[in-house]
Amino acid sequence: MNHQQLLEQAQDYVLKFYRTHDTSTLIYHNLQHTQDVVAAAIKIANHYQLNDDDFFVVMAAVWFHDLGYMIDLNSHEEKGAELASDFFEEHNVNKKHIELIVSCIMATRMPQAPKTLLEEIVCDADLFNLGTDKFKEKDKLLLKEVNLLHNTSLTKQQWREKSISFLESHSYHTDYCKVLLNNTKEKNLEEIKSKWEKERKKELKEAEKAHEKQEKKLNKEEMKFDATIVEENTHAAPVLESKTDSEKKKDKDKDKEKEKPEKGIETMFRISSSNHQRLSDMADNKAHIMITVNSIILSAIISLLLRRLSEYEYLIVPTSILLSVSLLAMTFSILATRPSIPAGVFSREDVDNRRVNLLFFGNFYKATLEEYNYGMQKMMEDKDFLYGTLIRDVYAQGVVLGKKYRLLRIAYNIFMFGLIGSVVAFIIAAAFFGYTPANVK
Image 1 (cartoon, rainbow, N blue to C red):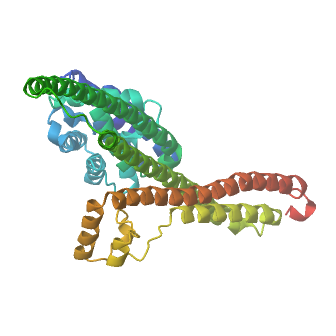
Image 2 (spheres, helix red, strand yellow):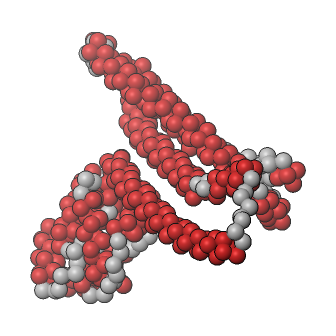
Image 3 (cartoon, one colour):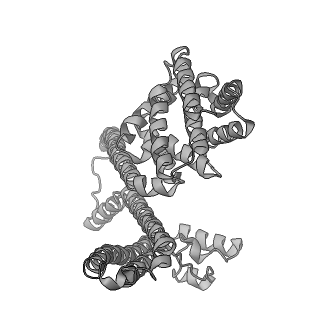
């Protein structure tokens, strides 16, 4: 089987398919997207040094994976797989290879769940742009396509919410893409969140202005009504009793109490909690990157260097340093993400004395529903208890975040300075001990 010739024929078939079908609504899933996925798949496949058969399977799958959009939008993976199967059967490709191609195409169905390395490569190539500088441009094209295909009118803000949810739930499958793309993907996510938060604050301000305008209008109408009543009462009773100073003071205190910014307080708590959660997710992602990178380094050391140290004894010290650095950095990264869960129970006395934070699952996951309901009812009835719990919850999140970032900083410092020290040790070992007569056999 001539793999290269078959792939050229498959490419010609796909290009002709796009030319002969209506793609006016495919703003994103067009020929350019397919070509981008092919380029990404080549890059990933070359990294893993796939053999000819596996490379053929991956490339065949990425060429056909989105052709189904021009046949049936709701089952485009199945249609793309059918087109690929029919094409390669006509070209006498064996069934085993066809089945692998079909499996790779079907693995791109959301949510992605690849089972083999070849499926992982195809899935990561399909969403390669999430971790590149082209994401912003591609995301706009996808919004236009969704509105056209589904006859909807999603706003930018609504689409940002969907994009944030998708990026937060997505993770690359191959180690290569994790190391190469995760940082940029995280930056793309933070940029969208920042725009979403900015637009949200703008909408809140506009809503508050509209609310204030409506209140002023109502107040004016009430004042007119009151003036009418006063005028009528004046005719009926010439002398009106004026309010005493103490009554006026009470009325002023009531007005101040009414003006207390309840919505502003709730918004503050919501934004603070959201920011802490976002920072926690960032810390977890940074720790994951550190764990992944050091796992690769440890694997390389164990599989390549340790077996040959008897031949190159002068590399024992720098290898030991690098091994220790990777192990320590990984340990502190794991400590940063290791969960810590409290006892999970509380008493009614704790609730009555306002000593428990019922907004954190760790404080009630072992309690009965009756006890939890009692605590929540008490908290909702007591304004001071409610706000005190919110304050305690935000503070606890900050404490946990501080611990995470402290451990992460230690891990990154160990990795940075340790890596520099290891490289220097390798250079010294090679320069002064690498070519001595004792080491030459």
